[in-house]
Length: 181
Figure 1 (cartoon, helix red, strand yellow):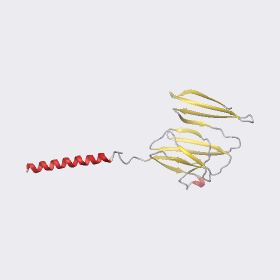
Figure 2: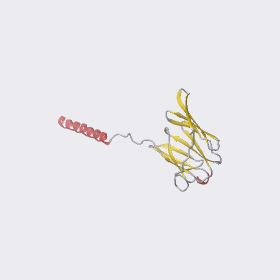
Figure 3: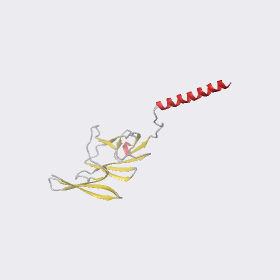
Figure 4: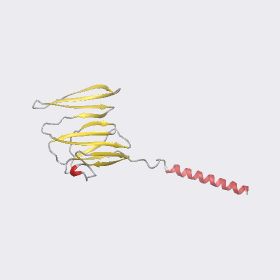
């Protein structure tokens, strides 16, 4: 049974948690994974490649016009079935994140993001997939562009009430004008 220990530390005056997992395989080899968590959000992780996993799948996540605490996305096999794999996450800065995972072969994996509300995704692929814009392949970048709000979000009832008040003021002025004449 693998043992798991969690250690606390301070970073930039904010408490974070460093989680280190050490596991021993049946052949006696050890593996280590580490994650840094701040306020319940994983900010950086390191998952080393397993032996024989020489193909790196990586992508970059960028934010424009806003930023969210996390993203949700799904990794797919080329046949459209969901592939399960843990990814390393590295925070480049507050608007750019880098993810990577290791695979045994290049099977044509791709990612589709569950886009946060108020954002439009732009998938920028490279190489033979550079013309694909509805999913992300290895080495690509997802840019989440915050869609500017085009209205003030007020209820139409407020606008109807404002129009009725304006109409009442106009009618009162017209009635007063008739009385004066």
